[in-house]
Length: 156
Image (cartoon, rainbow, N blue to C red; front, side):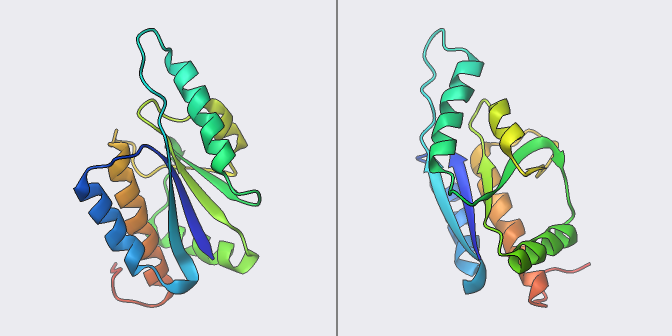
């Protein structure tokens, strides 16, 4: 299974890139991570948040694989434990699903992406920098797959 992440934003700081790459590198071959960066809309004077979100949503949908199981990250989404996320990954593997996590830009995700999503998932109710969410998501996916493999990385 390939786990895809579509993330609005590019030119991340080196520490974000290094953090993400560290966990992506650790993923097992049967659950590799693939990151696609979506160019954010420019913040021009007078541009409304709704317009920016709509334009970014169009770019997200254009990059979305055809058979993807769409998981939109949103602070109001379901916030599973790592054990629950691990069980969900196992289910997706059994079903042959193609999970695709979407991380919005600075203005968040357009409602059309949330409506189209198969699952709304929250990493935290805190407001987090979107680049940091990449690192946190990659780490949790690594931890969840490690749990499936019986690796001692996860402890309760």
